[in-house]
Image 1 (cartoon, rainbow, N blue to C red):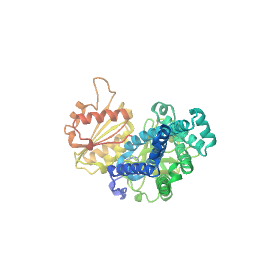
Image 2 (cartoon, rainbow, N blue to C red):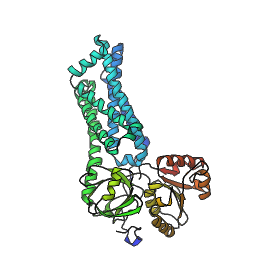
Image 3 (cartoon, helix red, strand yellow):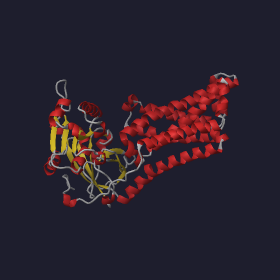
Image 4 (cartoon, rainbow, N blue to C red):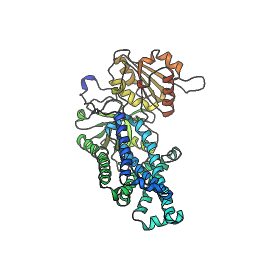
Amino acid sequence: MPSTPVSPSQHRQVPLPRTWSVSAIEIVGVLVANGLLIAAMWVRHGGLGLLTSLSGQLTAIGELTALYGTYLALIQLVLMSRSPWLDQVFGMDGLAVAHRWLGFATVWLLLGHGVFTTVGYALGDGSNVVGEFWTLITTYPYVLMATVSGALFAAVAISSIRASRRRLSYETWYGIHLYAYLAIALGFLHQLFVGSDFIHDPVAVGYWVALYVVTVALVLIFRIGQPIVFSVRHRLRVTNIVTEAPGVISIYVSGRDLDQLAVRSGQYFVWRFLTRNDWWRGHPFSISSAPNGAWLRITVKELGDWSKALQDLKVGTRVFIEGPYGVLTGARRTRPKVLLIAGGIGITPLRALLEALPARPGDLTLLYRVRDTRDIVFQSELETLARSRGARVHYLVGRRDETRDPLGAPALQRLVPDIAEHDVYLCGPGPMMQSVEHTLRRLAVPRGQIHAERFAY
């Protein structure tokens, strides 16, 4: 297996992923419309009649927080389904931000449901709140189940707080998040048998059941079904492992009919290497070479236990993939000139773009930021591509300090004087990307010309 770019004569045409005719405004519009419909159905089955007393008002708030907490939980499942049309519209960055904030909102709404409902019932019964809570979970059907569901949602939310996330391994964090599925299932049973919508309004019953069916279908199709079909069809296996730099390896994967696997340079798959101990772990890695119909390549830096374990992979190991995902592709390009800015192992998707983006000589520029020359990955490949494509490659080596920033505004203006006329593709460590995006805006590069994705390693 070669460790250099495939020659043009070896390339086989690879189909492009399907594009979806949907916009962010349309998706948000549908979500808002459904939110209004939920409120209208609550009014239809007599929700306003609760507002005549304080206990009724609190109970009404409890019902609404339950409805909207459940609705947001279903939206969360849709975000977790890896549906390609969502990925195309929002990208992984956008989906991650939405997932984070909707997740916290879900937990607060469901917590509010428990608090407001308990206090409202306590006022109505003339009892204290603690006694009412105990009565609810011990005598009312499915309330204990709902309490467990809320606790599971809270555990997922707590594990997502940055301070907690830093202390948890990826596997532990991922395992906790899987409990969100159980939490939603328990919440559905509570809603089915106790929820006022399901008891009093057949139209609402049909509506909510349809929401659950559509949500589960998206998860089954895109999170489970499609990856199984892809992996069975293409029968992927590890065919070579190449050391690129200290602690950095490239893994070559071959299979059947790879010229029929639709993927763009800059995209990534979630990879599972089916070994005895690690078959269940999935991690996102970009392809580090342009699709060629013969093999796929990812390049991995040793950053933890799992990435370290990949160093010991055996040739012949079977591979399971999910994807492709990501919007750091030529489909977002708006200008003839392109600037690629990579930091560290963030070179992987940009190396594939350098090979694949159509361009005239002089239109492609790569800035590659590393702390030490030993950290440069693909140097011979990059220089070969630069010569063959008429591209410019600049290695920005050394540590940043108060007087020197290799990716600061003066440096970028010196290296790329007409930077505002470029599309800029950016990939690297989070702090670097945030700093560079701020600098690019200071240099009058329009937001629509800045393409960045933090999950594109």
